[in-house]
Length: 319
Image (cartoon, rainbow, N blue to C red; front, side, top):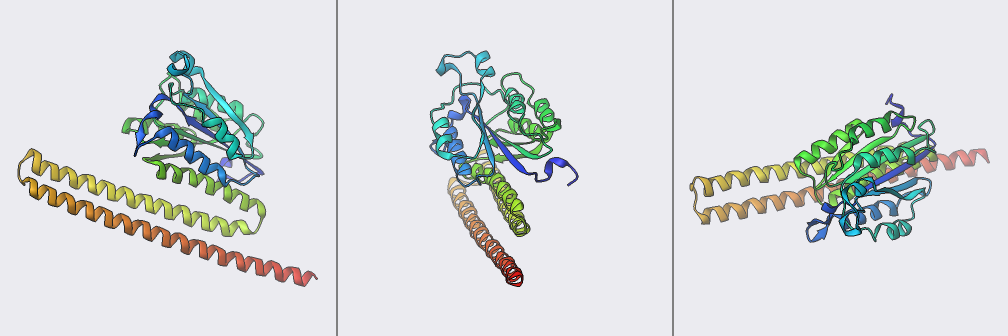
């Protein structure tokens, strides 16, 4: 790509911006959204290479339960883990005590992020931001402008946004932030999808490490691209199945409740069949993805073996 931001540089720096606002107390499948986000971040940081710098900034952690007004909450955005190699235990010690309580100053957080990256100019650094939020700005800030300024500055940061269980209007707002920051918006409806979204960031960081290591980077890049494509295809399949189920359910409800065209027994029968079909294709989707992922990894390992043989041959010739 011609855009300098999208080229690997000598160092990679990733800033995680975590929403700890009051709405993150909402539960999905019996678990608070904040706890899901925390666990996803721990999962993300646990396998990162030491060469990558990780920072963690939070907002929404000050509010009513901590004795702060809305104005004070909107000013509270803190870099709790400054850029360094990821130590998941240390990160967990800092994030675990946080409780969802305040408002959502995304704009203020991105403005502060520009200061966080001061020591990492884009000329020699690949700078990435991942905002994890369950909704739009609620502090009258301008996160779109802040994201654009961050991307256009000498930091050359790429601002990615992961919307966690966000409504339609919130998705549009968060997508606009990501687009302004030159990044990607990803919608995650549950913990698995959130981990998958962060997993793509992890794959990118691993790819950077392989790039730094030399020849093996091309093999890893190919595998990463294939793995990312497989994940995207799996997610697309999931979205299609979900939309199909929703459309069929809407028709079924209309036939029974609105038009009284079918009785309750027919409704229950068709509901059962719809769920059986959904479960069947969902299992097919998961099985196909796992098989494809295994094939990709086997191909990658085979490629590495060929590279190692070539290196061994060159080494023997030098001797």
